[in-house]
Amino acid sequence: MTDRAVRVLIVDDHPLFRDGLAGLLATVEGMEVVDAVGDGETAVRRTVELVPDVVLMDLNLPGTPGLEATRRIVSSGARSAVLVLTMVDDDSSVLAALRIGARGYLLKGAAQEEVLAAIRTVAAGGAVFGPGVAQRVIGGRGREAPGSLTPREAEILALVARGLSNPAIATELGISLKTVQNHVSQVLAKLQVGDRTQAAFRARGLS
Image (cartoon, rainbow, N blue to C red; front, side, top):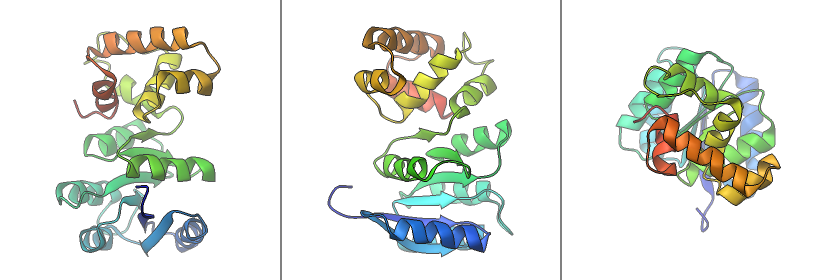
């Protein structure tokens, strides 16, 4: 994504929030708002037409709900990454969104910098979880995992899913590289996966 702007489609039924977010992104170098729409049906149609890099998707939409719109976008082959940005903060919605292919899940209370970083991350092929989401995803999959993650392990899993290296995670959390390596090893063992990529997919509910 280095040679052109990240193209973003905003989907939200609240005009003030939708217009405010569009105005914010318009001021950010390297980002371009290709459209801003207020319902799921239009979101699917415009995604297929415009093929944005990222679709910022609210879940509470009139007509076609956000989850169904996400499922249709993912299955359309449009190769647009869906980043959920919503007020909905319940386990079932988080799990459902990730399982149908959303690349990330943020709450509307997230800081501007967090939203911008998330857009860039999913546009580059990464996955993003807001605070607490990784732990809740793993908690919702507890019957499938041989051991539950500690809060610190879930935090590290979320950073792994964002594409951070072990040294970057150590810097982010203010802990030693050796401690990060130990936690990552524990996460891989508990999730019964062989590498970091598989761990990120497991966190998203896709494996």
